[in-house]
Length: 481
Ligand code: PLP
Image 1: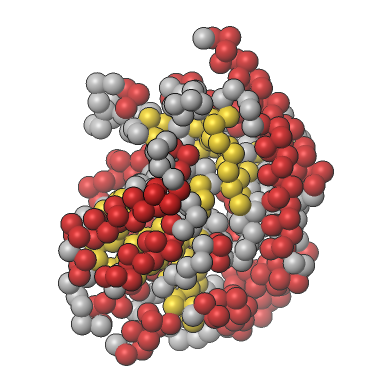
Image 2: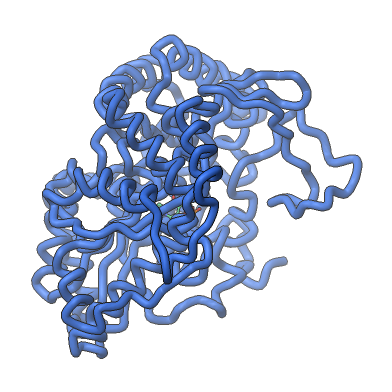
C-alpha cells in the first residue's frame, strides 16, 4: 500500500488516482517485450503513431483515429502543415542554434512581437520563451520573486495557488499544482512556501443556497483569509488557471471571480500570475483566456497552443510593473536554459501564430465552439450520469457523476471516465481523460480540445462517438448494479 493510504481505500488520494492519464484501450495489449523507452506505464507500450495529418492519427495497426483532444489541447492548427514545416526547415538551414546569453534570432524576436501585438494593449511588455509549460511556470515564479527581492521586499516569499489545479511537473510548478496523482510521492521534495485555496468550481462547490455572486464573494474572502494567515506582506503572488484544464475538466471560473481575486491581490500588493498554458492562444475563443475575465495578469504563461505541437515551446509574458521592477533593479533576469528560445521552436511557433492570425482561427475556434456546445448539450444533457457539460471555445469537459442530485462521483473502481475514453478510442476518437478529486474521491471527466481547424462534420462525428461510448458504459454500469 502507498504510504498515504487510509483505512478506506476510496479515500486514498494516491492509490485511487494513480491511474491518472491516458488508459490503454481494449485494442492495446500488454507489451510482449520490454521497451527501452520508459513509458508512463511499465506494463503497457502505447500505440505507435506512424503518420499524422490534420486531426487524424494513423497507428501502426493501420487504424486511423480522430484526435479530438489535440494530444492535450496542444494541436491547434492540425498536424503536418506545409507552411510550418517549411518555416522549420528554413530555420534549421540558416541557424540551428544560438546561446541566448550572447545572441538572439529574428524568429525569437518576431515571435515575441506577434504575441505582444495582442498583449501590449494589456500592458504585457516582454515575452520569454522556454521549452515547456512547467519551465514557464518556474520562470514566472522566479520573475515574481525577483521583482520583490530587487524591489527591497525580500520578506515576500509565499505563493498561493488553488486546489484541483495543474501547473506542471518540475518541482516549482508541481508545488503550485494540486494534482494529487502526480504529486503525493514527491511531496518531501516540494516547496514549503506554497499554500492552496479552494478552486472556482461551481458545479461541485457552489452551495445550493448560494448565488453565483455569493460564491465568488466566499472564494475571494477565502483568498483574503489565506493572505491574512500568511501575513499579506509576505505573499509574492496568487497563481491560477483562468480555465482549469486537465485536473478538473475545463472548468471556467464563475463570472466576476477573477475581478474579485484581482481586487484582493491589489489590496495587498500581491501579484496575479495566470497560467494559460492549456487554455490560452485562442483555445477558449479569445487569444488570451483572461480577455474573457476582464482582468489583466501581472505575469502570464503560455504553452501548448503556442507551438501547436510542432516543436517544444512555452513562454512567459511579463507585465509593465514587473518589467519596470527588473529594470530598476539589477536590469537582469538571470535565468537561462540551454534550449530557451530555441530557433527551431521559435520559427515553428511563429509560423503557427501567423497562421492563427491570418486565417482568423481564434474567431473560428469561438464559432466552432458554439457549434460543439450545441451538439454536446443535445447529445448528452439529460443522460443519467452526465453531471456537467462545460467549457469555452474548443475546450470542453464532460463530468460524469453517479448521482446527479447529490453530484456524487462514481467509486474510483468504476472507472467511468476511463471507460468512456477507452470505448471512444476503440470507436475511433481520442478523448483526454481526467480524474479530479472531489472531496477526496476521484471524479470522472473527459475533455475535448480539437484543433481550431476542425470541421463541423468532424465535430459531429466526435460527439456521436462520445455518445455511443457513453451509452455503452452506462449500460455496462447499470447491468452490474
Ligand atoms: N500549466 C497547465 C495549465 C497545464 O495544463 C500544463 C500541462 O498540462 C502545464 C502547466 C505544464 O506544461 P508542460 O507539460 O508543457 O510542462
